Length: 219
Image (cartoon, rainbow, N blue to C red; front, side):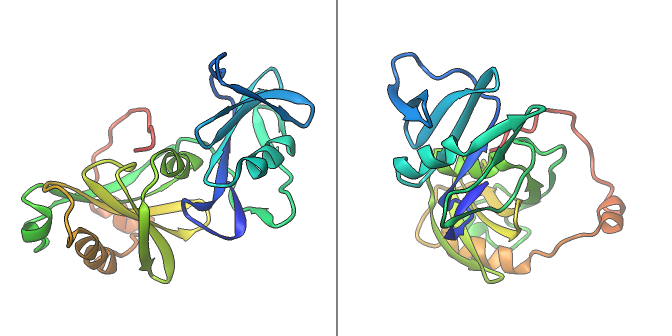
């Protein structure tokens, strides 16, 4: 994940993913450091190390091209030398090996009037795919959670979720499935986020979580 100096989760940055499927042959052609690439909505895709790589973000196209031109790959992993004014904030797999998530009844949390009678979910995950989805499905500025900039998006599942970054490359979120989002939704998610607390490994095991083997596609 690459960000501008003033960047934060899902804002003023980009995610480089490798490998990815080939871009559509009808996509607009552009130059990536002497290599022909293809442009898409907020993306640049180009050939790299016998496959294709993609950079997606909310930056100007010239910045996405500059990041792409400074990307190499070795042993199946991309490496970026960020342009001036940008920094690599995290490296890791697109899909996290595990997602730790807890679900509650929204009524049990006292938020049924705003969120409806469905479920509230909260979790923590790693992996660039979550931020990539935030760029693919733009959300809204969500204020601060614990002093960290947050975003409100439907990219993490449910009707809406409030997501923030406790540490680079780590996404924490609170979301819900229930009533359609309304004027009080973000405030309700903020109230729940303020009540959230991290669990260490022992506390998580003591909760006796169930395990589901699946592909952890972000969102």
